[in-house]
Length: 68
Image 1 (cartoon, rainbow, N blue to C red):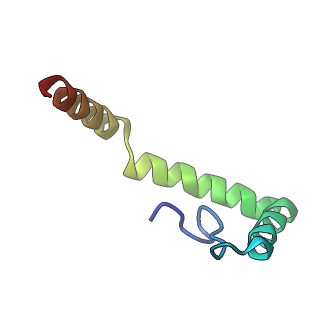
Image 2: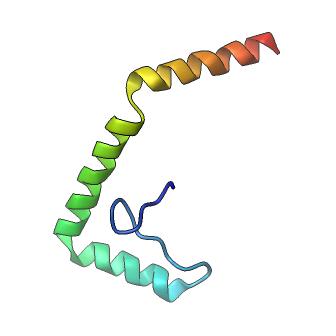
Image 3: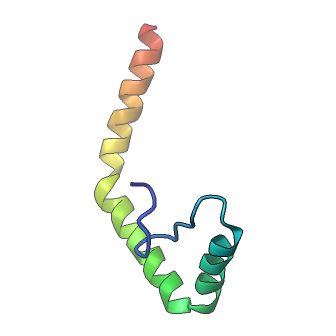
């Protein structure tokens, strides 16, 4: 899942502007929550998307493009 509610972001109900604004206000008012979500995002990025893995994926993508 791209968004992990409460861990790295806020997931609003589909087409619910009130719910969306609730999430924005919560993040605006809670500095610690913003900081924690930022730390969580960084940790997940480092763990699940390491540079070596991303480089390997790009090489494979370029190989596929070049081979047609």
